[in-house]
Image 1: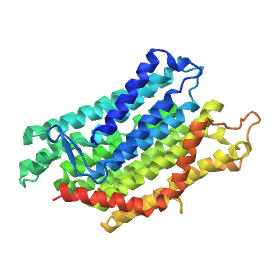
Image 2 (image 1 turned 60 degrees about the horizontal axis):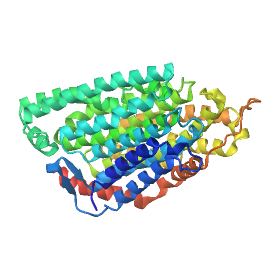
Image 3 (image 1 turned 180 degrees about the vertical axis):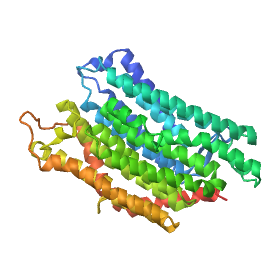
Length: 483
């Protein structure tokens, strides 16, 4: 089986949807909906991806594209996030507004973004990495502005401008690395940077000074996070969910390439910077989230704080560190998608984004209120939910490496996050609903996705073999790259 099959399946599905839409077939009452084809394509991509498990690393294009076991887990997380995002789309699109809102084109754009993210995971040189990153990012600008409102355009423009600035910083950093090493390959650059002399250190610091802002933008690290609240609020809610999950995992892939594949010899010198970024990001995200009144901006700052926790896994050059990051990524995807499923239904059916509009949800829609409560508790790290297990691994790995103060700060931040998550739960369970508050109803596809996400929120953290497989893949990867 070709290791490129998952990417090709997504691209073929996108073009297939375009061809069907060309003949106006989706307007027929008897035709299958666009999300059916999208879910099928993503589902077959996941199957083909995990069918590659156990094969030796496969190399294409002279080493520019490689598929290893660790890449399979990263790509799997991206595809799972894409799958759940598509299940949310029927909640905001239907046959009546299909043409008006260009639903097929929306899904095609989403599939192209997913394919770029998969290519990014297997990139092994600077050019392939940058082109894949742009392929993954540029369609997101269009998805953010899809609703064509003034507010949506404002958020998308801010996202676009800051995204362009972040990409510019990255390409400057890559240029410095190429100028010094004369190579584009990750491995060649890593070996060249290992030469212990002062000129090397100065050039590495200069390259890092340019690369960190680009990486910080993608991961929404402080102080490069400022685009996120506006973009999250401006986007259609499924796109907000996609930005907070798949885009976040893509940032983790980028961090893995840069910090572990290129700067592994310098990682010890970079750790103080990473500590500061981690602590500042989680602290700002949590404390600013307390003041939010819009539910989507609230989730944006929650996502920013989660990025601070995830950065803990990169404080150590060890298989356990990258395994804990990957494991928490899966947990975060299931948890966040469960929360956003309820938020999407609420916003679409009430046309309100204020947190106060959730009051009394437990009385009008008790099942959906329970799902949102479980998701919020998991994000806060309450046992025995999956979020607690994921944070336990992240914190314990950092503590083993001697970062006790950082772990203590992270624990305090988790306590703070519980406070503002409880504010939403209070609205749902203590306050009474307005007389015109509707009972939430979900399309079958959205309801199925919500059930799967909720099951993952509750149970995935307790599946030890899942973590063991990720740890094994991380150990194999470290044997190849970290010498």
